[in-house]
Image (cartoon, rainbow, N blue to C red):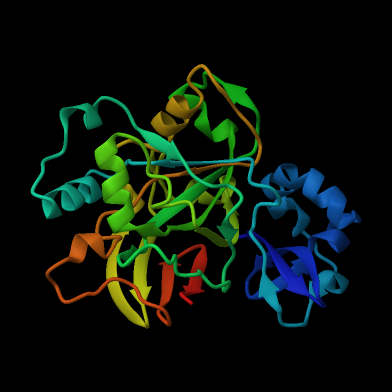
Length: 300
């Protein structure tokens, strides 16, 4: 697997290809500045394999990274879908409710705050207005090509790659907002984590099960203890249907991030009654993927 990330070396953000335990400088691989790489980022992501066909040893970064940046140079919009039936069922069951019939008609989503994206290893500041902080275990697909009214069968042409996402949630605020009929807003907009790397859509070919469905395992880990795990193979609305819905009579753009929604057993909300408490300051949350890496944030 070839992964692309934006890591900090020598106090500066560098775009790198991570392959077989080594970091390769994209700037050195293709002789472009970081600003040019940001401009051509989605072409670079698509062709990352080709850059490593015969890499020069001089392109290897031997230093350890000092930190991570958000793997997308600029998030132009952030849509979060609601595509896993198991999660919807578990969450509704906790409130004594059934899945509404309307949920099965088409994939629904909301827009979240694209300006409050948190990178791997950056802290999540605990919102002062909540007592029920939760994590949400998700995947985020990054749009790499402009399009409108896209067929579900053509989605691969428009998706550049996939990364891990944590859609942090203030459950008490979210519940009150949705009862009014709008939102979630303040229940969600204080932070969304993305990273640490992006895996190109072409690199996912070996994990493809069917149209828009991939074998990608995720686990949610709190303070070193596994809370829940699931696989994208269980998704109800496949990625093709999600892209078709997102682009229906509107244009999607490079840099748009489209999240799948929470995997089943991917939240503390679904584990109420099992002794697992809501998150508190000092807790460390990791969303782990078998092929993308680990997205970790500490709550402060």
